[in-house]
Every structure is written in C-alpha cells, then in structure tokens.
Length: 147
Image (cartoon, rainbow, N blue to C red):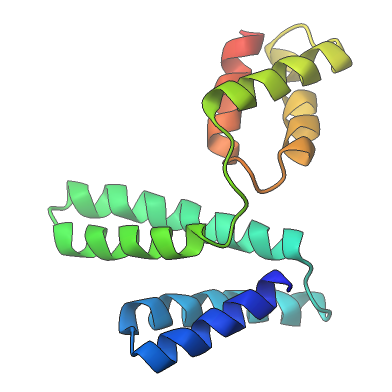
C-alpha cells in the first residue's frame, strides 16, 4: 500500500469514527499533496509525499514555538497533535547517534576538511537520510563535526 493510499484509508477511518481533529489534519495533508501534484502535473511517489509531510511538520514545530511565546497554549497543543498525526506517515526517525554516524561516514567519503565543505556534506548526507531526519538537526551536527 502506498503512502497516499494509507492516508486515504486513514481519512475514511477518521470520518467513520468522527474524529474531527484527525480528519482535519489529514484533509490539510491531502490538500498539500494535491497542490504539489498539480504543480508537478504527475502523481507523487512516497519519497515526495514524505518530503511534504516533513515540511508541514517543520512549519508546525515553528508554530508551536511561536504560540508558546505568545501565551497561546491551546493553539500550541493543537499543532502538537497535528505533528503527532502527521509523524505516523514518516519512516522511523534517526537518533542523534545514527545521524552522527552517517555524517562521519559522509565526511570521510568526501574528504571534507572544514566548514567550507558543509554544502557538499549536507547534500550527500540528506540523500542517505531521506525523510528519516530533519535538515535542521543534520545541519547542526554537521557544523559541529566540520567545525
């Protein structure tokens, strides 16, 4: 079953169980996928859908931080629930130690010497970690390793 089929199935289940928050989140996710399909003028594969989900999770995470700073705990909780729902569709995320191991391997493969090689390292590492790690976290670890 493809990721898109899984999302459609979960939407049907949310409708049947009358889970409004889950249904709303899945509809939002489907709309984002549909927008990208219209832009691309073709069906999306699972990796592209994972990329969309990661982007939405990153935005929601930033929103949680902003809502907390503004004293809007209710909106922050809603965003966190949406993050939890969308995270189910992503592959298991790598731990910090696993990211460090992949980055160390990539640094040695590319013979990277310092911060000026960060772009090359990030590009190669993100291909290896596709959908399994947030770029921001990978970037921080890569800077530390190259610095």
